[in-house]
Image (tube, rainbow, N blue to C red):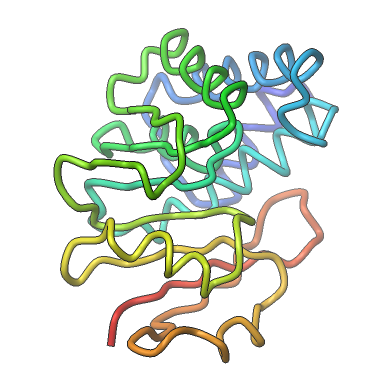
Length: 208
């Protein structure tokens, strides 16, 4: 199968219906990531087919769990994951992608320009330095930190009743047990990523 066919099959397997332009944008993002990765080492995944599964489809697996989220922050976003694929899949979503590494943030800025992602803002800097115009409905992270550290860094960005969305591999039972006081897990979704045999989970955290 071509990459386009693999992407289409993966999107169907996830039960998603994407905007007309999304497939072309996702493939353009993938090509740009592979190109930059040869010079700047943005991700340890080298093969484009592996990137499709491990990065694009892994990110898109979260889409059904975004609910009515309108403003989303992605912290420690690296090469723009999961934020940029989510912004492509949900054009009405307003995304702020936060990455301290200048080369990775520069890649995201180039991707935003080339893909025409008007709903994306890139913040190059630490999350503590973000001066958001308004709070977020949700903050997401992907293999970023422990749940406790995620709460510490991201809690101040949330609106009242907002959610923290932590993308994890194995179920992080020890991290859940060590959550700071005032926080609880409200959902733990097992994510079935097409073509990926490893366990993946989305942990949803809210204030008590």
